[in-house]
Image 1 (tube, rainbow over the protein chains, first blue to last red):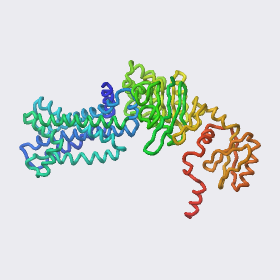
Image 2 (image 1 turned 90 degrees about the vertical axis):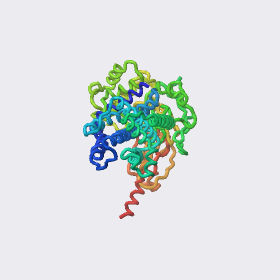
Image 3 (image 1 turned 60 degrees about the vertical axis):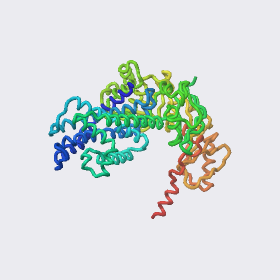
Image 4 (image 1 turned 30 degrees about the vertical axis):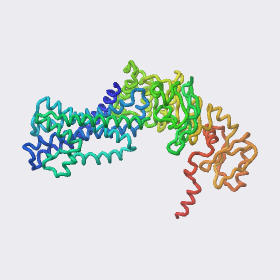
Amino acid sequence: MRGVVYYIQRDFLRWVRGSVAVFSALVMPAAWLIFVGLALPIRFTDNYLDFITPGILVMTMLSAGLSGGTLLMFDKILGFLNKFLALPSPREDILFGKILFVSIRGLIQSTVILIIAVLIGASVYNPLQYGLTYLILFLFGMLIAAFATTIALYLEDHDSFAAVNTMIAMPLFFTSSALMPYNVMPVWLRTLAELNPLSYAIDAIRAVNTGVLPFVQIAALIALCLIVTVVSVHVFRRVTV
Amino acid sequence: MNAIETRDLTRYYGTLCAVNGLTLSVDHEVFALLGPNGSGKTTTVLMLTTLLHPTSGSAEVCGHDIVRDGKQVRRCLSYVPQDMAVDIKLTGRENALLFARLYGVADANDRVDEVIGVMGLTDRADDLVKTYSGGMRRRLELAQALVHEPAVLFLDEPTLGLDVAARSTIWEHIRALKKDGMTVFVTTHYMDEADRYCDRVGIISRGTLVALGGPSALKARLGKDVITAQIDGDFKDPRIDGITFFALANNEASFLAENGREALPLLADALTKSGVKVRSLALREPTLDDAFLHAVGTPEEPAGFDQTKFRTMLRRRK
């Protein structure tokens, strides 16, 4: 598994030296947090900022996870993947390295979002609650990253991956419980939201924040994460022969 | 045991046969697989580096089967694809160190210093690859490939897109590696480079190996002289004793002659008589290009550019 560490190091160095990309990924979630979280004149709950923050954190992890597919796609079309596949180190390390890297990167980005949230007035929780929040975010990031890399392995070029990316991201976010509680949703939206894996993660973080341990959601996330990772490894082995 | 041994190696993409029954032994030499674009060179390399399974047939690298013992095969080879895939946001040293670590090289740092030195990149080792020239990037890729001292080195079009000086540097490095006992398998479509720097060449056309041997042997097989004629008009083989027509490309007809000097006037007469305008005739020794054209017949894309048709088309448009 040492290969995983080296692949993560490589991606990490490329990321921190990418200047613009380090900040640009934060703009979207920060904008949602500030412009929607603070400005929307809706009060579903006492503190809408506290309500929407878990949703924005999960949104940050969603785009972080999807970027795993973009990274793998570029490695594929630029010839890096072939060079790595011709190495004697275990080939799956390439895949695990990508999934772990984007999940860790997502957690770093989430931390920045969390700090912004607290600065503009979100409640502060205890360390155990933050620990659980990070665990949930990490599981969710792995799930999305494994899914995105699988798609990237199937597709031929970056344009089609970008299309799939946009096709998935927004609908998933809007049909989740990120922006409003279930009791104000229309029935059709509620059904979608209850099935949406984003809601599992968002609801779990909200439960943690109220002092409840969300066993069901965490178990569901672990199960989904395992299934999608197994599928991803299977697809990876098949397309790389 | 030969470093590379293939038996009837075949690969289909759907119904298209990319490599057709390739049987080949390569050992302790610089071997070039020559062929036009799309002739199956890269497919062959992908199979030998375990990145693609053959449809049928088998191959061994260092005695390990490429399908059954993929990992053992990868342990003894290095592969440099034609894409020039080096991380531009990493330094040269970081790029090489990544590969040394992935290969599990014992003293990674020392080994990296060594290969970077061999490739003449020591001065620039800690600069970002973004600032490297094409030739330097290619040398860095060679350094990456050499960190674990492979027995077999696969280079896909190693000099593609490089200037003349960078090309000869790359080839000098390749020759030096062979001297150290490495087997180097190169693909290229530059005949002159293959002629000058390779011990043996295999000419591949439409997936089939059509000629195999040392460059000088392949040229000698053609006979004595080559005559090329620049012509206008519809060419027909004039069929003169002692002069064999072997290729026509871009209005240039090539012939082999036992005695070139005597053949020149005969050929000029015969061509003019057949209604073709002869613009120039040239007499020279055979090159690997001739050996290639002789083996392949007509080039791969004969319909690529037809000057006569192009002119007629232009005239019609007026």
